[in-house]
Length: 293
Image 1 (cartoon, one colour):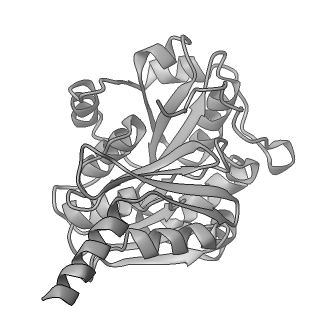
Image 2 (cartoon, rainbow, N blue to C red):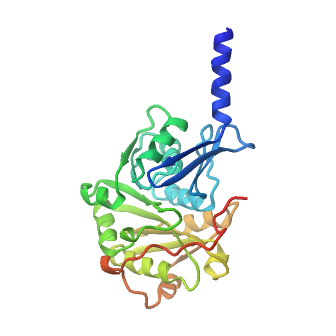
Image 3 (cartoon, rainbow, N blue to C red):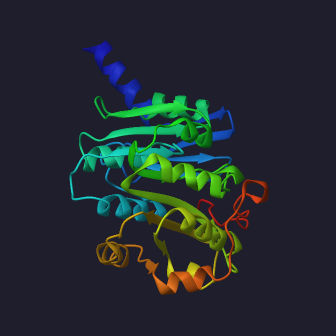
């Protein structure tokens, strides 16, 4: 009994102690949330990347993650299993969410930082039988090698530090995403920008070449140009359930606005699609924009 108790105490202590480690593309920290047992915040080079509650995987702490979650909830009828491709891994918040809300889904997660994947797998292990396969690879290279019509949903949440890498912003990349998605598939992307929205407008213009339907979700203050922030792009070859998605994001604990149709076309304005040779990363966030505390 004494040895068993000691092992239990070691496990509890290990679960409540912050973990810090150099990974392939920066310095990662896993910090426990004092208010939620077995909940963790992942940062890389000081920038918040993911929040995970191991006991409640449907809890989405970050505003942008909640909006991606609303997108995932409305792409198909509740509970239907899906084939989901995640570009960008973090602490695997959204793959865990899909596994909990859509049991039986098959998911691939592509993360360029093998060290980060190892850290998360070691300290925040996935449930047995979650149906989530992890791949240490460059997102675009993996996408280009993926089969046609192989995914129902593609979630792009790739940040090098606090910026979307340039090679994931071009028309050639968007065309690969469209090829991999099935005819009724949905593309979800987490982007970040501020007024005058040169990057965000160019991304909408780029994706609109490939997908007929677009919607944009963001906090009203961001869309009014008051601050730097995240915007979630939703795109598909078929009509989106705009009404359901609008209701969800408007009634969220962190209310957001959904732009669609003429209003979104007006927002895009004269922005042009981005070619590979013109591609640039998303803008550097102002100091403290995504800080902690």
